[in-house]
Image (cartoon, rainbow, N blue to C red):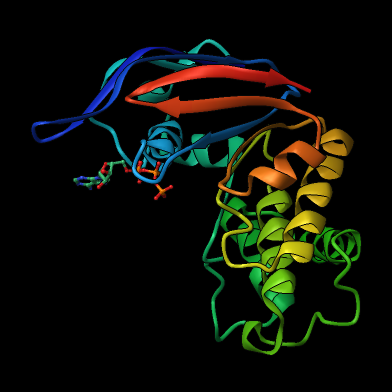
Length: 218
Ligand SMILES: Nc1ncnc2c1ncn2[C@@H]1O[C@H](COP(=O)(O)OP(=O)(O)OP(=O)(O)O)[C@@H](O)[C@H]1O
């Protein structure tokens, strides 16, 4: 599904990724850990092509990411961030529905799916509220529902619990794991929250000095 081979990324003189290799199967869940500045976000950015200049190969389902039109890549890959990235002037429901508009789905279909996902992420009854009226954990659930509307084959999460308290972080990891199983997605979750990683059995990767090491499997 995701093949990363011998990928090197430099920012000026600084080598952040140094011949990284990683293979994720379809439907696999993995945590990516590593110290601040070790290059975790950079790796995700290469995958969803926010950054294009690197050497080596990154392929999804056998297709080099560089040869895929960005809109196609955005259908395949959903992304969630520590900062949620919700639109403040749109309601919860509108935030989730946005991706449907971009994909050109019918309003009715998009509405039905958005409502289903909001229910699934525990947000029924909050559809008409604005992001500022929600807790951090609820805002992250909206971001998850929004990412899933596209039904991505892959979900990348960059420190999704970075702004949440411990209990909410634990809930979020369990929710992500459940949704990953339910939707059969390939999921790569960057995190610092070591304790919760141990509570959610999964493949665990560690990034250090530009390389990725396997440090556990379930
Ligand atoms: N656009 C950029 N230009 C120059 N240097 C950058 C750029 N983006 C990131 N870096 C540097 O590359 C290194 C890796 O950054 P990256 O954000 O990938 O790390 P990270 O492991 O995700 O860190 P954190 O856990 O703190 O988010 C850092 O030293 C950072 O300063």
